[in-house]
Length: 85
Length: 426
Image 1: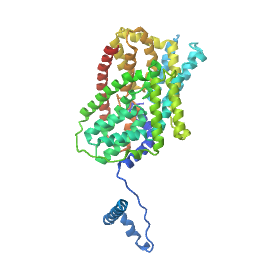
Image 2: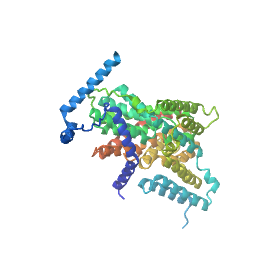
Image 3: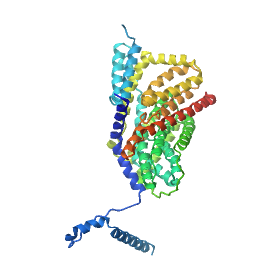
Image 4: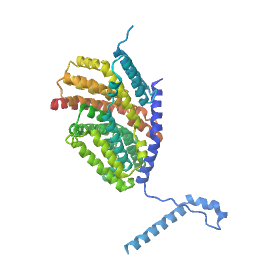
């Protein structure tokens, strides 16, 4: 058994013991440190089934995402105003 | 050809150390094999009897360790350590150079309570998340944290297995231990941070506010507050337990029970996550070391150490420091500490040195020695796994080189510190 084998064996053991816990910690820290975000689930509206392709492309459509972001801002501003009134 | 009892026990011990070193079997199984062989040869050669053998196991220490494990596990689940790490980071903000000081210090602080593997999970994940957010190379930070994780293990009598072993076996009180551990840890932390800063040469870079809420790491504020309150009470009781006529193990297990009741956590889940392999490792190794002691082998080693050092206090303490460090660099520091304790107990009555200096040279040696290579102790191994998981490659030789340089520098600083300790209290 060479030194390289020993190092590999040690690394494999430490990985199997610790990596699942690390994955949990990493996700937890990412959630805390990243900007708060929400994930929306939007279904294709009724009557637009023939536009499935166009609907799916909206997920990466910059213009559409910008419009959603503006809608979020407007909604939050309205809620803030309502709260201060 | 006849073979002496000492030689048989020496062979058994070397066999077990080889099993641990080569990782042929899990270290706990290696210790249990050692216990079995020591029991067999000890009883067959009438070195000790069965009843006497049972007294080799230090049940007080086992109870103490289990009690501390439970308290720390509950505190970890309550989010105490995450909250602490995040609060410090939130307060100081982030620039690359500042993080090179803050991350090791957070690591040292948390590893004063939590096992160094768990510390690396929390601080390693935090480092990767911050590195991603402000675009940093995580390697220097993770290397310095893996080294700091061992240093923090010197802070309290409950901080690591070697401190618990030496603390209990040498009869330290909680406060008596603290009187030396605080300056020692501060000194070694300062040395570690300064060396890391000079070796890694991180630029100051742009300062960035991170803006996050540390409370988001806490699921239940009630459990969080109760676990901190019980922990503070435990520390106070540790300080006064000798006046109350209690052992530290009674305080530890009593506090653990109160904490379990007050936090209403799932006890099966908590107990299932304790480090039972280490508890069984102790039990096995206690029998092996007890056998070595009864066979007269450890007395023989003590005599040779005395002959080598000529009973010179400075040479003796520095020999223990460096031998403890080198052996812990090669093998896990728990079996090394367990084996060196009875040898040192044999040496103490024969030299005119304050025993505290000898015990501390052992503790510093076995703690710092774990940093010699990335594979010498769990924090280094966990760090390598984190780097692999995060897709960082080609780091091993840099890691090895840095570990070696930093450990040698730490040991030289520890040599001066131990010598100063010898002059002041020796």
